[in-house]
Length: 362
Figure (cartoon, rainbow, N blue to C red):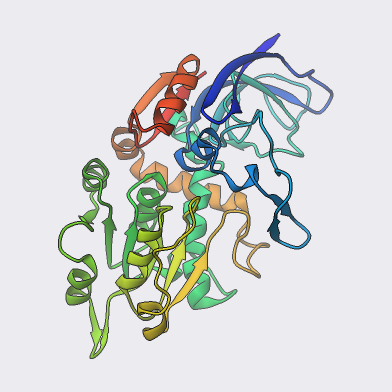
Protein backbone atom coordinates (compact mmCIF):
# COMPACT_ATOMS: atom_id res chain seq x y z
CA UNK A 1 0.00 0.00 0.00
CA UNK A 2 1.25 3.49 -0.87
CA UNK A 3 0.36 6.91 0.54
CA UNK A 4 0.61 10.23 -1.29
CA UNK A 5 2.35 12.82 0.89
CA UNK A 6 2.87 16.58 0.45
CA UNK A 7 6.57 17.37 1.00
CA UNK A 8 8.42 20.71 0.99
CA UNK A 9 11.83 19.64 -0.29
CA UNK A 10 13.34 23.16 -0.39
CA UNK A 11 12.15 26.78 -0.24
CA UNK A 12 9.68 27.26 -3.09
CA UNK A 13 9.66 23.57 -3.97
CA UNK A 14 6.59 21.51 -3.02
CA UNK A 15 6.10 17.94 -4.21
CA UNK A 16 3.56 15.17 -3.92
CA UNK A 17 5.50 11.97 -3.34
CA UNK A 18 4.46 8.36 -2.86
CA UNK A 19 5.66 6.51 0.22
CA UNK A 20 5.13 2.98 1.48
CA UNK A 21 2.31 3.03 4.01
CA UNK A 22 3.29 2.29 7.59
CA UNK A 23 2.66 -1.18 8.93
CA UNK A 24 -0.54 -1.69 10.88
CA UNK A 25 0.72 -2.98 14.24
CA UNK A 26 -1.18 -4.20 17.28
CA UNK A 27 -2.76 -1.19 19.03
CA UNK A 28 -2.82 1.02 15.93
CA UNK A 29 -5.38 1.93 13.26
CA UNK A 30 -5.35 3.18 9.68
CA UNK A 31 -7.30 6.13 8.32
CA UNK A 32 -7.98 7.33 4.81
CA UNK A 33 -7.97 11.10 4.53
CA UNK A 34 -11.27 12.77 3.73
CA UNK A 35 -10.25 16.41 4.22
CA UNK A 36 -7.06 18.29 5.04
CA UNK A 37 -7.11 22.00 5.82
CA UNK A 38 -4.28 24.33 4.83
CA UNK A 39 -2.89 26.64 7.53
CA UNK A 40 -1.60 29.58 5.51
CA UNK A 41 0.66 30.99 8.23
CA UNK A 42 2.64 28.03 9.51
CA UNK A 43 2.71 25.95 6.34
CA UNK A 44 3.60 28.74 3.96
CA UNK A 45 6.49 29.76 6.23
CA UNK A 46 8.17 26.50 5.24
CA UNK A 47 7.42 27.04 1.56
CA UNK A 48 8.77 30.61 1.74
CA UNK A 49 11.75 29.59 3.88
CA UNK A 50 10.88 32.07 6.65
CA UNK A 51 10.09 29.70 9.52
CA UNK A 52 12.55 30.31 12.38
CA UNK A 53 13.11 26.58 12.83
CA UNK A 54 14.84 26.57 9.44
CA UNK A 55 17.59 28.98 10.45
CA UNK A 56 18.23 28.59 14.17
CA UNK A 57 18.00 25.79 16.71
CA UNK A 58 15.31 25.65 19.37
CA UNK A 59 16.74 24.73 22.76
CA UNK A 60 13.71 23.29 24.55
CA UNK A 61 15.51 23.02 27.89
CA UNK A 62 16.37 26.73 27.95
CA UNK A 63 13.35 27.94 25.99
CA UNK A 64 15.63 29.79 23.56
CA UNK A 65 16.32 29.97 19.86
CA UNK A 66 20.08 29.79 19.39
CA UNK A 67 22.33 30.27 16.36
CA UNK A 68 23.98 27.30 14.75
CA UNK A 69 22.26 24.70 12.68
CA UNK A 70 18.64 24.33 11.71
CA UNK A 71 16.04 22.83 14.00
CA UNK A 72 13.89 21.37 11.20
CA UNK A 73 15.92 20.94 8.00
CA UNK A 74 14.39 20.21 4.64
CA UNK A 75 12.68 18.14 3.49
CA UNK A 76 9.61 18.95 5.58
CA UNK A 77 7.60 15.76 5.36
CA UNK A 78 4.83 16.44 7.87
CA UNK A 79 3.09 19.60 6.76
CA UNK A 80 -0.28 20.59 8.16
CA UNK A 81 -2.36 19.89 11.27
CA UNK A 82 -6.00 20.02 10.15
CA UNK A 83 -6.97 16.53 9.00
CA UNK A 84 -10.19 14.52 8.96
CA UNK A 85 -9.89 10.79 8.36
CA UNK A 86 -12.12 7.73 8.25
CA UNK A 87 -10.88 4.61 10.04
CA UNK A 88 -10.55 1.80 7.48
CA UNK A 89 -8.61 -0.75 9.56
CA UNK A 90 -8.12 -1.09 13.29
CA UNK A 91 -6.14 -3.33 15.61
CA UNK A 92 -7.25 -1.62 18.79
CA UNK A 93 -10.61 -1.97 20.56
CA UNK A 94 -10.44 1.76 21.36
CA UNK A 95 -11.06 2.82 17.75
CA UNK A 96 -13.82 1.34 15.60
CA UNK A 97 -13.68 0.91 11.84
CA UNK A 98 -15.86 3.54 10.15
CA UNK A 99 -15.21 6.23 12.76
CA UNK A 100 -14.64 9.71 11.28
CA UNK A 101 -12.26 11.79 13.37
CA UNK A 102 -10.25 15.00 13.46
CA UNK A 103 -6.49 14.45 13.60
CA UNK A 104 -3.15 16.23 13.06
CA UNK A 105 -0.95 14.05 10.84
CA UNK A 106 -0.22 16.31 7.86
CA UNK A 107 -1.28 16.44 4.22
CA UNK A 108 -1.32 12.83 3.06
CA UNK A 109 -3.81 10.39 1.60
CA UNK A 110 -3.65 8.01 4.54
CA UNK A 111 -2.04 7.46 7.92
CA UNK A 112 -1.41 4.77 10.52
CA UNK A 113 -1.90 6.15 14.04
CA UNK A 114 -1.33 5.12 17.62
CA UNK A 115 -4.29 6.40 19.69
CA UNK A 116 -2.10 6.61 22.80
CA UNK A 117 0.46 8.88 21.13
CA UNK A 118 -1.66 10.94 18.68
CA UNK A 119 -4.73 13.16 18.88
CA UNK A 120 -7.90 11.45 17.73
CA UNK A 121 -11.18 13.36 18.14
CA UNK A 122 -14.26 11.45 16.90
CA UNK A 123 -16.68 13.78 15.13
CA UNK A 124 -20.38 13.78 16.01
CA UNK A 125 -22.78 12.59 13.33
CA UNK A 126 -24.54 15.97 13.21
CA UNK A 127 -21.36 17.87 12.19
CA UNK A 128 -20.34 18.34 8.55
CA UNK A 129 -17.11 16.26 8.39
CA UNK A 130 -15.38 18.93 6.28
CA UNK A 131 -15.67 21.30 9.25
CA UNK A 132 -13.78 18.71 11.27
CA UNK A 133 -10.57 20.28 9.94
CA UNK A 134 -11.00 22.86 12.70
CA UNK A 135 -11.66 20.48 15.58
CA UNK A 136 -8.29 18.95 16.50
CA UNK A 137 -6.02 22.00 16.40
CA UNK A 138 -7.21 25.20 14.68
CA UNK A 139 -10.34 25.63 16.78
CA UNK A 140 -8.42 24.99 20.02
CA UNK A 141 -5.91 27.67 18.96
CA UNK A 142 -8.75 30.20 18.92
CA UNK A 143 -10.46 28.87 22.04
CA UNK A 144 -7.13 29.12 23.84
CA UNK A 145 -7.10 32.82 23.03
CA UNK A 146 -10.37 33.26 24.91
CA UNK A 147 -9.01 31.11 27.72
CA UNK A 148 -6.06 33.49 28.10
CA UNK A 149 -8.43 36.46 28.22
CA UNK A 150 -10.41 34.67 30.94
CA UNK A 151 -7.26 33.91 32.94
CA UNK A 152 -6.25 37.56 32.65
CA UNK A 153 -9.36 38.43 34.69
CA UNK A 154 -9.94 35.33 36.79
CA UNK A 155 -6.56 33.71 37.30
CA UNK A 156 -6.99 29.96 37.72
CA UNK A 157 -10.71 30.21 38.55
CA UNK A 158 -11.89 30.07 34.93
CA UNK A 159 -15.27 28.36 34.62
CA UNK A 160 -16.13 29.31 31.02
CA UNK A 161 -14.49 30.63 27.88
CA UNK A 162 -16.82 33.57 28.32
CA UNK A 163 -15.18 34.70 31.56
CA UNK A 164 -12.84 37.06 29.69
CA UNK A 165 -15.27 38.46 27.11
CA UNK A 166 -18.81 38.33 28.55
CA UNK A 167 -20.31 41.80 28.58
CA UNK A 168 -17.04 43.34 27.33
CA UNK A 169 -16.06 45.26 24.20
CA UNK A 170 -13.83 43.11 22.03
CA UNK A 171 -11.71 43.96 18.99
CA UNK A 172 -10.12 41.34 16.75
CA UNK A 173 -7.24 42.44 14.54
CA UNK A 174 -6.96 40.16 11.52
CA UNK A 175 -9.78 38.65 9.49
CA UNK A 176 -8.13 35.36 8.56
CA UNK A 177 -9.35 32.00 9.82
CA UNK A 178 -7.90 32.48 13.32
CA UNK A 179 -9.38 35.96 13.65
CA UNK A 180 -12.82 35.02 12.38
CA UNK A 181 -13.14 31.89 14.51
CA UNK A 182 -11.92 33.85 17.54
CA UNK A 183 -14.50 36.55 16.84
CA UNK A 184 -17.25 33.93 16.59
CA UNK A 185 -16.11 32.42 19.90
CA UNK A 186 -16.22 35.85 21.55
CA UNK A 187 -19.71 36.57 20.24
CA UNK A 188 -20.97 33.11 21.21
CA UNK A 189 -19.68 33.62 24.75
CA UNK A 190 -21.45 36.89 25.36
CA UNK A 191 -19.19 39.77 24.30
CA UNK A 192 -21.13 43.03 24.30
CA UNK A 193 -19.50 44.11 21.02
CA UNK A 194 -17.14 42.38 18.60
CA UNK A 195 -15.39 44.32 15.82
CA UNK A 196 -13.03 42.71 13.28
CA UNK A 197 -10.35 44.93 11.73
CA UNK A 198 -8.62 43.92 8.50
CA UNK A 199 -7.45 45.91 5.46
CA UNK A 200 -8.41 43.16 2.98
CA UNK A 201 -11.90 43.74 1.53
CA UNK A 202 -12.55 40.03 0.94
CA UNK A 203 -11.81 39.25 4.58
CA UNK A 204 -14.10 42.01 5.80
CA UNK A 205 -16.82 40.71 3.49
CA UNK A 206 -16.42 37.22 4.97
CA UNK A 207 -16.63 38.64 8.50
CA UNK A 208 -19.77 40.59 7.66
CA UNK A 209 -21.32 37.50 6.08
CA UNK A 210 -20.73 35.78 9.43
CA UNK A 211 -22.69 38.60 11.09
CA UNK A 212 -19.64 40.40 12.49
CA UNK A 213 -19.01 44.13 12.46
CA UNK A 214 -15.86 45.26 10.64
CA UNK A 215 -13.58 48.27 10.27
CA UNK A 216 -10.99 49.03 7.61
CA UNK A 217 -7.76 50.08 9.39
CA UNK A 218 -6.65 51.84 6.20
CA UNK A 219 -9.64 54.21 6.35
CA UNK A 220 -10.39 56.47 9.31
CA UNK A 221 -8.12 55.80 12.29
CA UNK A 222 -9.92 52.81 13.90
CA UNK A 223 -8.44 53.58 17.31
CA UNK A 224 -10.12 56.99 17.23
CA UNK A 225 -13.37 55.45 15.96
CA UNK A 226 -13.58 52.77 18.64
CA UNK A 227 -12.32 54.95 21.48
CA UNK A 228 -14.92 57.55 20.59
CA UNK A 229 -17.60 54.86 20.63
CA UNK A 230 -16.44 52.76 23.59
CA UNK A 231 -16.47 55.00 26.68
CA UNK A 232 -15.94 53.58 30.17
CA UNK A 233 -15.19 56.73 32.19
CA UNK A 234 -13.35 60.00 31.85
CA UNK A 235 -9.98 59.24 30.29
CA UNK A 236 -10.92 55.56 29.95
CA UNK A 237 -11.93 54.62 26.43
CA UNK A 238 -11.33 51.71 24.09
CA UNK A 239 -11.52 47.93 23.88
CA UNK A 240 -11.51 45.84 27.05
CA UNK A 241 -9.53 43.16 25.26
CA UNK A 242 -8.01 42.84 21.78
CA UNK A 243 -7.26 39.54 20.08
CA UNK A 244 -4.30 40.06 17.72
CA UNK A 245 -4.53 37.45 14.96
CA UNK A 246 -2.47 38.79 12.08
CA UNK A 247 1.26 38.10 11.99
CA UNK A 248 2.45 41.54 10.97
CA UNK A 249 3.96 44.22 13.17
CA UNK A 250 1.52 46.96 12.14
CA UNK A 251 -1.30 44.73 13.41
CA UNK A 252 0.21 44.46 16.89
CA UNK A 253 0.82 48.20 16.97
CA UNK A 254 -2.84 48.76 16.02
CA UNK A 255 -4.01 46.28 18.67
CA UNK A 256 -2.18 48.23 21.37
CA UNK A 257 -3.70 51.51 20.20
CA UNK A 258 -7.24 50.10 20.41
CA UNK A 259 -7.06 49.24 24.11
CA UNK A 260 -8.46 51.14 27.06
CA UNK A 261 -5.92 51.95 29.79
CA UNK A 262 -4.64 48.80 31.52
CA UNK A 263 -6.27 46.63 28.87
CA UNK A 264 -4.76 43.45 27.43
CA UNK A 265 -3.81 42.26 23.97
CA UNK A 266 -4.12 38.49 23.61
CA UNK A 267 -1.66 37.70 20.84
CA UNK A 268 -2.30 34.65 18.65
CA UNK A 269 -0.08 35.77 15.75
CA UNK A 270 3.18 34.38 14.35
CA UNK A 271 5.64 37.15 13.45
CA UNK A 272 7.98 35.63 10.87
CA UNK A 273 9.59 38.98 10.08
CA UNK A 274 9.88 40.42 13.60
CA UNK A 275 7.95 43.46 14.84
CA UNK A 276 9.95 46.59 14.10
CA UNK A 277 6.86 48.81 13.79
CA UNK A 278 5.70 48.20 17.36
CA UNK A 279 6.15 51.33 19.50
CA UNK A 280 6.41 50.29 23.13
CA UNK A 281 7.22 53.85 24.17
CA UNK A 282 3.80 55.14 23.10
CA UNK A 283 0.35 53.72 24.03
CA UNK A 284 1.84 50.57 25.58
CA UNK A 285 3.81 52.62 28.11
CA UNK A 286 1.46 55.55 28.71
CA UNK A 287 -1.71 53.47 29.05
CA UNK A 288 -0.15 50.71 31.18
CA UNK A 289 -1.10 47.95 28.74
CA UNK A 290 -0.51 44.19 28.91
CA UNK A 291 0.47 41.73 26.18
CA UNK A 292 -0.16 38.00 26.55
CA UNK A 293 0.94 35.33 24.09
CA UNK A 294 -1.70 32.63 23.63
CA UNK A 295 0.46 30.09 21.81
CA UNK A 296 -1.35 26.75 21.45
CA UNK A 297 1.47 24.80 23.11
CA UNK A 298 0.32 26.10 26.50
CA UNK A 299 -2.92 26.98 28.23
CA UNK A 300 -2.61 29.63 30.98
CA UNK A 301 -0.57 28.55 33.97
CA UNK A 302 -2.59 26.50 36.42
CA UNK A 303 -5.40 25.63 33.98
CA UNK A 304 -3.95 22.55 32.28
CA UNK A 305 -5.80 20.03 34.50
CA UNK A 306 -9.23 21.48 33.66
CA UNK A 307 -8.68 23.04 30.22
CA UNK A 308 -6.85 20.42 28.20
CA UNK A 309 -6.87 20.17 24.40
CA UNK A 310 -9.84 17.81 24.47
CA UNK A 311 -11.99 20.40 26.21
CA UNK A 312 -10.94 23.07 23.72
CA UNK A 313 -11.90 20.69 20.90
CA UNK A 314 -15.29 20.13 22.54
CA UNK A 315 -15.79 23.91 22.66
CA UNK A 316 -14.93 24.02 18.95
CA UNK A 317 -17.51 21.36 18.12
CA UNK A 318 -20.20 23.40 19.91
CA UNK A 319 -19.19 26.55 18.02
CA UNK A 320 -19.41 24.68 14.70
CA UNK A 321 -22.76 23.19 15.61
CA UNK A 322 -24.09 26.72 16.02
CA UNK A 323 -22.34 28.41 13.08
CA UNK A 324 -21.27 25.52 10.85
CA UNK A 325 -23.37 26.43 7.82
CA UNK A 326 -22.00 29.98 7.77
CA UNK A 327 -18.44 28.81 8.38
CA UNK A 328 -18.67 26.33 5.49
CA UNK A 329 -20.12 28.97 3.19
CA UNK A 330 -17.97 31.97 4.04
CA UNK A 331 -14.68 30.70 5.52
CA UNK A 332 -13.95 27.75 3.25
CA UNK A 333 -13.07 29.52 0.02
CA UNK A 334 -11.71 26.56 -1.98
CA UNK A 335 -11.90 22.76 -1.91
CA UNK A 336 -9.31 21.13 -4.17
CA UNK A 337 -7.88 17.61 -4.71
CA UNK A 338 -4.72 16.61 -2.85
CA UNK A 339 -2.98 16.19 -6.23
CA UNK A 340 -3.16 19.97 -6.73
CA UNK A 341 -1.49 20.76 -3.39
CA UNK A 342 2.03 21.47 -4.76
CA UNK A 343 0.83 24.09 -7.24
CA UNK A 344 -1.67 25.50 -4.75
CA UNK A 345 0.84 25.96 -1.92
CA UNK A 346 3.42 27.49 -4.24
CA UNK A 347 0.87 29.92 -5.68
CA UNK A 348 -0.27 30.92 -2.19
CA UNK A 349 3.31 31.44 -1.00
CA UNK A 350 4.17 33.59 -4.02
CA UNK A 351 0.87 35.48 -3.74
CA UNK A 352 -0.34 34.46 -7.17
CA UNK A 353 -3.47 33.21 -5.44
CA UNK A 354 -5.36 34.37 -2.38
CA UNK A 355 -7.71 32.16 -0.36
CA UNK A 356 -9.23 32.40 3.10
CA UNK A 357 -9.37 28.67 3.79
CA UNK A 358 -8.36 25.91 1.41
CA UNK A 359 -9.38 22.34 2.14
CA UNK A 360 -7.69 19.48 0.32
CA UNK A 361 -9.68 16.34 -0.42
CA UNK A 362 -7.94 13.00 -0.07
